[in-house]
Image (cartoon, rainbow, N blue to C red; front, side):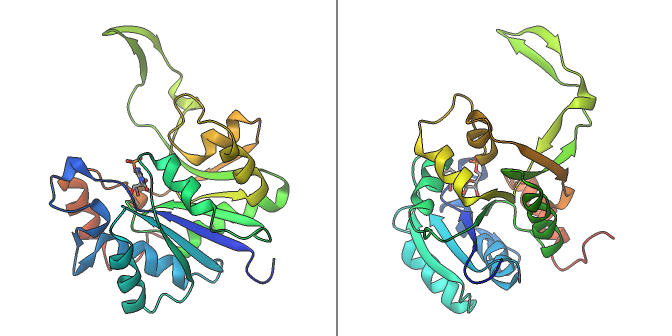
Amino acid sequence: MNGSTTWAILVAAGSGERLGADRPKAFIALGERVLLAESLERLDASAWIDAVVVAVPPAWEEAAIVLAEELVASKVAAVVPGGVTRAASVRAALVEIPDDALVVIVHDAARPLIDDAMIERVLGPLAEGYDGVVPGLPLADTVKRVERGLVVETLDRSALVAVQTPQAFTATALRSAYAGPDPAGATDCASFVEARGGRIRVVAGDTRLLKITTGADLALVESWLGEPPPG
Ligand code: C5P
């Protein structure tokens, strides 16, 4: 795949309420920089990625453009205001992706430690005919389905994975999945593609792609900054 064919959408428009900060999550400090800087710089530096669209909270577009300039992130093609939901932010970013894009990788800015090995891992199976590829981690805890405080079912843990980003899709599959209404309970991009009958492959996830939700997550990811990825 040559030319501007692999695009990345970096969704960074969440509020991050649970962190209790005075600004959106993407703009809180992670080490010496803002959180968004980490994933933006890593995506921009990746040889697998041709161009990047960033979705940020409305009124934070200028801050993101300045950040991209500071990082000399030359692959940033557009910064868009995100929506009320993650899905709305993905939709807003998709509008900026040209028709000739072949592959779209969607990544949460809240998972700063994306690396090239993971990008390569999610891109690989697309060539084998899958519509999408997601990283997944086995579950350590027992998982139960609960209704009104009562256990309805204990699920077979060995058949379950906790799904992360980056998620890679053919541009056609992702576009058509987001052209329709939001499927019930869809919290990631793959669930949109699944709802349309798309085939999604799961590859090994990475514990360091932890999604920063609480202050404790932030401290943990901060402690991993600058460390080489586990071999
Ligand atoms: O809130 P959630 O855990 O789903 O957020 C995952 C990612 O989606 C975060 O990087 C967040 O910035 C992004 N997001 C977004 N627009 C929203 C909600 C979340 O871009 N309205």
